[in-house]
Image (cartoon, rainbow, N blue to C red; front, side):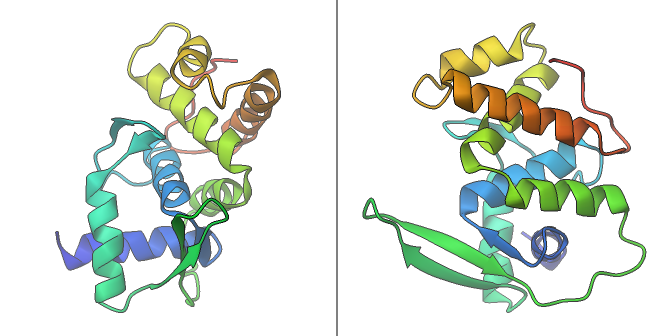
Length: 171
């Protein structure tokens, strides 16, 4: 892993508003940006929580070690832990508005809706004919009608942000 990739992890957190709660959310924000043509530094594959990049996970750890980001671990109510990533940095004027809009929308979105929307996008890009049905099949514990509708609404919000690589119309 390089310092450049650690710097990209820092930029993703910065562009998301300087604070990202959860490693899974960081993964989804990075995937949303990558799928939109705004970063191509990390390779994503499908894991239990949807699109995941081991390269990004490593870059986030290195960014912490290099002092590029602050990471605080908190105890979750269920007994595990989660991370809060923080970056205090100004956003350069040349950062595309699409990158800021997508990153901030993902950072503020409901966690389950974000996971389902990112999963449907990933499956669509993998050539799955009905990515929403496949998302529901793969995530039955999360993909109830309320969460699926929230994910579709979020997906539509993402689609409305002009990006170099538009999101497919799978609604």
